[in-house]
Length: 427
Image 1 (cartoon, helix red, strand yellow):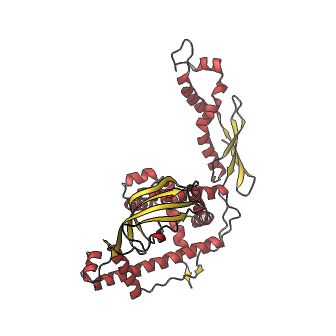
Image 2 (cartoon, one colour):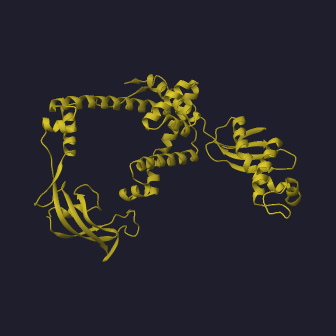
Image 3 (cartoon, rainbow, N blue to C red):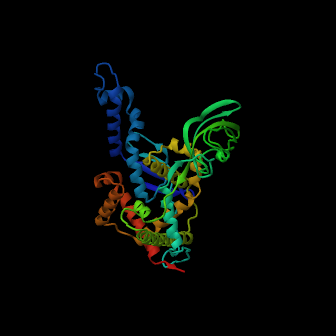
């Protein structure tokens, strides 16, 4: 094989390569064995026609396209390696020649990873603002949050207030006609939670169980159901119950209910103070790391990011996010319905800092390359063990899912981050 790459733009170029006769022959054999299975040739059982007869009837050139499909991936990968380039998108293939008895000549329009010119990435000075002190008020707030989680809902006869939960039936209509999703029975709604259409919950405040109210609202202009967006609606709502939160007293008994490992409120406070201190230390460490990496990225020069890389990053982040939702039992469609958003809006949300994430990853990779890290088998084994424990999976399953090259890349990236952050000076 001969391969060469000629740049045609900042991150674009043409890769020219050949496929030699020995590989072409293998491709033709594979193509013939695939095609002959469906051939009906007089005098031969289906799929049993000889190569000689096939060539006489159809010509060997009829196999070229199928043969190229068989050998192109391997040939392209070899050409990429020989040319020393790093493509970031699917190439646009063009066939220059496929003459019988000669090497086939192929060109590919390729988008490659941009060049990164590193600036300073060691001994960086950064400023961070993190309050590392834990006050009594911080501890009390954590206990109060736990107290609210243990609150019980108790039916009350008085009118509903913000924070109360009402059990309701409702039927919504637009122009007197009921619409899909606008009807429910015995639905629990916390007033003030902003779970319903703006203006709905506020109109239930001040009403008691047994009352029926006509709640008038206007759907937002950007409502996910386009047939309802911007329209006025009336929800006939019947309140069956009004429930108020009854919170327990903050005392030793509550402390034991919150955490079975403590016996007194004083012990819980001391434990929470330790936890909050550790959390703030982690926040500080994360803030320093973020500031150091951002400084290293700012010091580096990347002339232009390929749009393909940014696009792929958006979809990677979306898939990761929706995958996490799926693990919690929430499908993509359910998420969009619950949040009143759409796939397009989620795409826009992740577009916001995709450019920044791509630049950061490129700089970290460039630091790893500059430091010429070598990943040992022990490091790979440790990484697999940590991932297996983190995701509660057998090591063998992790090894199947993650190729060695990907593990080496991730380990090198961690080392690069350590190089950047271990020498940082915090002002």
